[in-house]
Length: 235
Image (cartoon, rainbow, N blue to C red; front, side):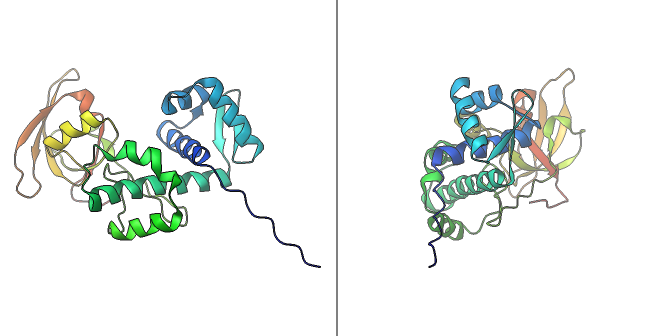
């Protein structure tokens, strides 16, 4: 007599969020600590520790030293699915629903992991099969691959360089609105004209389309902007 194959238990939205944030923190900093993850998710360290213990038991992650965390193969697969959902939803909201890039992250964080996978894939098609979210972050492929462009911080470049904005490393709504008002968004080409010494402001000349304005921004803001050579398409 044949036995029915047991169903794989559904993975909760909270677990998907948790694993996705671990992946992003590891990519950005090289190592994930419980304290950093608590700050990132705005959750207490004891709550993070309890979730981590649970996911270690379930095989989604493993410990690295006393406080570090590493994703297992299955944990990384779930993490990339979570990131794909979120970034597709963001792209769909901008492309088809009239939202602006400073509005979509909070909505996607709260809702994307509750969405049916088939619905997300339809959103992907409706949004034009984007490679990146509105902030320039790469969208993982359906089979779990992700391409991170080799971008540099704007503050690390020499003067006179022709560059294109690859991504903006912030989800702060007021910051994104300000950058948007200056047309400093992913895909925009510009030139770093001058930089004041001692971590001073940077002067930028826009070279995309009909935009030929110059803007001056502070170094702290410029550190949020990642760019690539304007002659190379790394998108």
